Image (tube, rainbow, N blue to C red; front, side, top):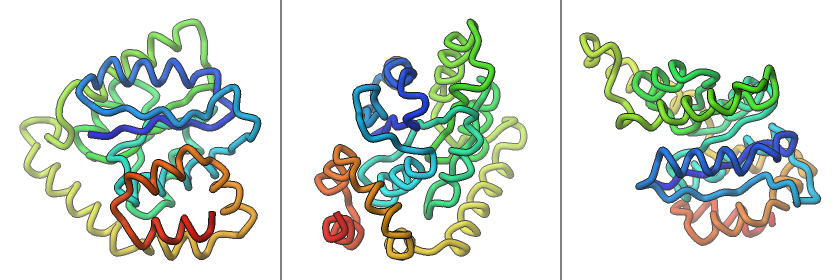
Length: 208
């Protein structure tokens, strides 16, 4: 499993903490840290990061994205606008566990600024621990597991039917937004090297 860590620039000081915590609780995964880093001069909004998360997942370069912004809500909503992305908002360990087991998505958004008090690091640690505590998609509660898994399959089928292809979305983006997104060279280069969608890779290469 390949997991990308990438959060908005407004919370770049939390990046290393998120990366270390994901590596701690997903030790068998290949965890790739895309920032945003404190040292980066270019600043990326949650909307721009959501597009990058969508590109990483739609290209097949990664299997899962751990992201976040100040509230976590904006990033979750923005990521869910991306084709093929099912992103959960996980402010607590319970939310993380239920999202992983019931919704079986491929991205999560953490609240990294709102009410980030002295206990926040402990909560983040427990939240990521619970997220990766069991294989995804087993259903919950266990007595209703079969029904819950069928509901999740139905949700994903409906989402696929209601969304455009990622290549079509990229073509529809305003040029200033797309140009800004593609300045994140570590993400772009990783997609071009590891992505499995040749059409999307070609488009990114031409636009970049």
